Length: 332
Ligand code: 13P
Image (tube, rainbow, N blue to C red; front, top):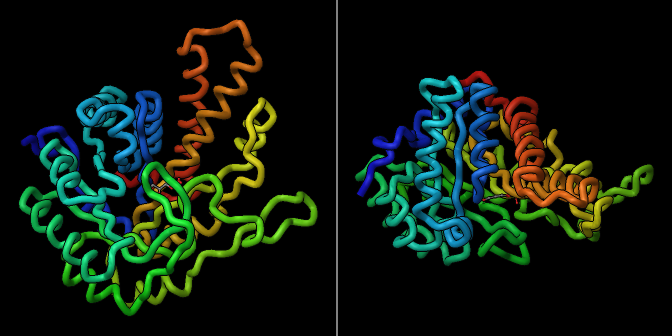
């Protein structure tokens, strides 16, 4: 058993309180590789932003759970080395689906876990989340639970249809589970194909898909029921068109990829939404830079040559999100 406190990490409690009061959101960036970790830390240090580094079950399978945990510890030391003496870094489990997985992460030094029982019947979701909360709080680890179902595919998490969160359930759910934050479904979705062309309209000038707006009415109703309670948005990549175009130009095939417009995320950040999850945009930024580099330099084969621009492109994206979308810069 290792406490996250020994690793220099923090939980989300104070961070969320300040974010809700200050009208901004904390970035929750997924990471699987060293380059993603470096880019996240560099961006957070340069912008003086708190940051949540999140690990999914898929990331643990890909990179190895122990390695990821030490990478998060390394992230804290790296931030100090970059000139940030007291970084606020959360190591969070994204989409934990069992008590055992959450417990394993807590025992390994995670400072925050998500228990995602959103696909279960309501009472089963409450029972599972309560069990995780009871264990996590013994170690001062914060817990995110979810009500409502997001559509889309991400690692092992997938659903064909979305079900908006029912505002009439949120008080009962948060009280009975004791969760520290609540992920809700208001129309965001996982992956680079958040909406089918049939769900969108097309911009007559560019021919690009325009997605349906988020259900801000549901968000506001939830805020009224749970004043000041930290709300989380998953599936919040914007799928930047320039990255999609670069990927397609250099041999990729991502027709009609579409995300959540950044203006809507900016608006959400000003509300009780205090954590915004972004994974796909990092994947797109990395892939676009690598495809471009390799197409332009066909004789190169040293991974450092193409991973360097990939890391720079991800860092640029993270900084953009922090400063221009979530507003968490200068909040350390
Ligand atoms: P995106 O696929 O929109 O990046 O969502 C990531 C996410 O919600 C991780 O839990």
